[in-house]
Image 1 (spheres, one colour):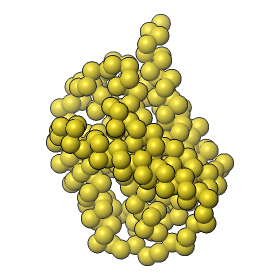
Image 2 (cartoon, rainbow, N blue to C red):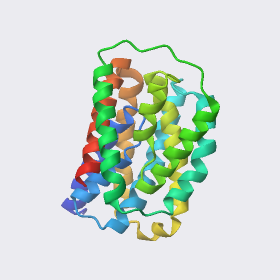
Image 3 (cartoon, rainbow, N blue to C red):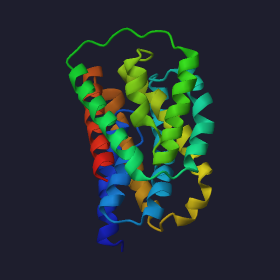
Amino acid sequence: MFEAHTLLVAGFLFLGAILYTSVGHAGASAYIAVMTLFDLPPVVIKPTALTLNIFVSSYASLRYIRGQLFHKVLFLYLIIGSIPAAFIGGRINLPSNIYKPVIGVLLLLSGVRFLIQAMQNEKPATEVNKSLAIFIGACVGLLSGITGTGGGIFLSPLIIWLGWVGVRQASGTVAAFIFVNSVAGLLGNFQSTSSLPSELPIFLVAVLLGAFIGTRFGIKRFSSTGVKRALGFVLLIAGAKFLLA
């Protein structure tokens, strides 16, 4: 019989996966917040979040790509810069008081902006600036490796604001980007995998079930306005997590 504490953690991870995958994210920020709330050891949190991210983002990206919500050219240029940067970021452990407040404020502002944009019409997509895409990929990749996330919470606002993809097409592009970055970040800090918890299989089942539900909402139920609202709330939650953790 599973312990009540483990099932409670799994339940919250399940809910986080539903919310995040509905907008093409894998949920690492939510997983980190849940594990922190339930007092899991810090040495366990980062590799566990990245591992959950890898499984969830691989499933989510396949679902969104099949739904034709994916920008192949943008994805390729983003990962040129992000893969080596995420690997390097995975090896870096900065003091949390340096980057968490700045990232938290940026995410809160982005969340508010998306909630405002939900009341506005979506602008036409523009051509991808390839050099800028590589640079953004490198910056986001580095941040994702350092923070133990896949980078989706940083990437989505940027590529939508630049007009390279529509809100719905961003979902599949970001999900695939998260998968690549999570793998690179975990490889950069591979020794941390020795700290993966024995409860990991239960957590994996919980987040994959959540991803199954969340991607159905993102692909079939949400309009562009609905995605903007959901993404706004996700960014607000992620920003609060970085400020309060």
